Image 1 (cartoon, helix red, strand yellow):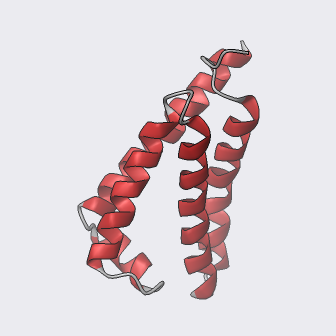
Image 2 (cartoon, one colour):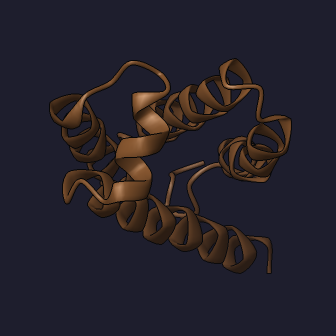
Amino acid sequence: MLKIINTVLILTAVLMGIKQGLAMLNAKTEMLELFAKGGLGTAGVKINGAITILAALLILFPKTFLWGNFIMAAGILLVACIQLTDGNIRGALIELPFLVLNLVIIYLQHPLRAR
């Protein structure tokens, strides 16, 4: 049962990562505005989007699972820090459940990992 729950959590994180990564890669206005507050231009946002998609895909494989989660968590922390730098505490708090999701997934480990 725990493996099923963990699989659902992993798929949720992967789909959210791909969705956010595509929004950055396609330079959506909201993403450009958010990252501009952190000093990133359009190219930086697109690179961050590509890295986010890559991190999401890395989570799917047991050998790259930890790195994918680490990179994804770092991206979430980046967004939270940009929000805090802008004085948006609510925006930073919204990012925390996503960070916790990655930490829980790491704790539960990859469901296909050989034990």
